[in-house]
Length: 366
Image (tube, rainbow, N blue to C red; front, side, top):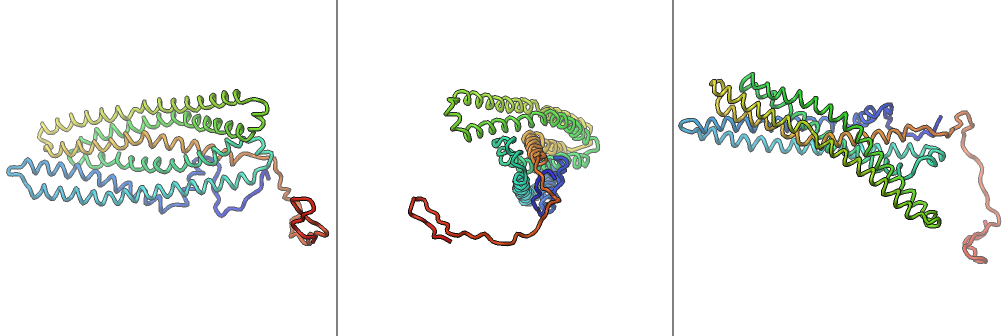
């Protein structure tokens, strides 16, 4: 065997990064259910608000105004949002707990793996880079779940609500939501493909920065005895510049997030379509108001996904670095064919003394 095995009650699939993360998530099925139920309920009740406002708008335009309907719609908004707040709390709580447990379990698994590695492995592996993976990269996996996957799940449910509710006003009004969903998915796929490479670069740059810093501090006697302070400062600045450049490149990619443009196009096309149907007498003014409120729900996945997908990419990059460290082979041989048994006998000390100062023994002879 290439390394000592450390007994663990939970075994994970370390064949790929995705399977490794999923094998950890599968241990928290109840929390996953709580997150997705809360996400769906939150989005569904958010879609209730524009529908009720549209109905209240028609009641206000009636002659005379139907104040009873307006009051009922107002109570409906208050009640639905109170329930929505509870569901949103459940979603956020489930994802936060899951993220913390994921970080704890992965750090424990990584630590157990590092203890089993040979000294030759640790001699070749920079301590600073190992520390960066065991601390910062593991925490990035926590952020992968919360806010990453938490916001992705929430935004996905916000995406489907306009498509589900809009046809209730008129079947043709499903066109704008469908256009946004299709183009949004294509844009996000391209965005993630580009972001994955730069996310890996950011994590590698941070590991190099942290690794060189740890080596300089750990060997500070050598640095000072050879008067290498200036050279070490130069190397640190070089690594810091590399990390900064990678982070800036990531920011440039995020700034070109295409769904921001798609949101404006969708709302413009949807508004023109709704006004066209209103002029034909096929929908009422309240329907136009409610429909535009539904299209406004796309604003949440558009703006929040800029943060969410960045967190997911950085979290997966961190998970890849952790798994790479655990799967690294060492030259340590357990000698599985050797003899194994209980040690018997005893060690006896005879006429042995110990003390910090000469002629002042701290322990009597045994």
